[in-house]
Image 1 (cartoon, one colour):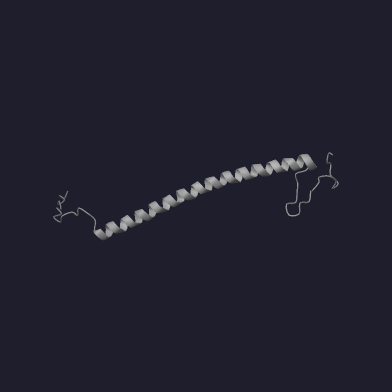
Image 2 (cartoon, helix red, strand yellow; image 1 turned 45 degrees about the vertical axis):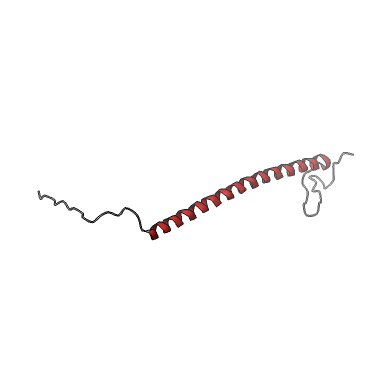
Amino acid sequence: MAKKEKIVDLKPKAEKITDEQLKKVQTIVERLNRTRLEIGGLETRKHSLLHYVASTQDELTLIQAEFEKEYNTGDINIQTGAINYPENGKANKKD
């Protein structure tokens, strides 16, 4: 077998990156951190909006129950206010 020669690198190793490289990497990390912070803010806003949707849906369910009790149907045309009765178009309203 041939004996491998050991190569010795006499060039000194760098101790730091260049100022230009440092500035560039700092800028990239700063942009990344800002973006992550913004995503966190958006997720917090999204969470709040989802709670708002849930409470609004609860309100709708309550008013539909009121319509059901008063008109025997919760099927209302939200454009005109017309009541869509389930049978023969007549109300079963209790007086």
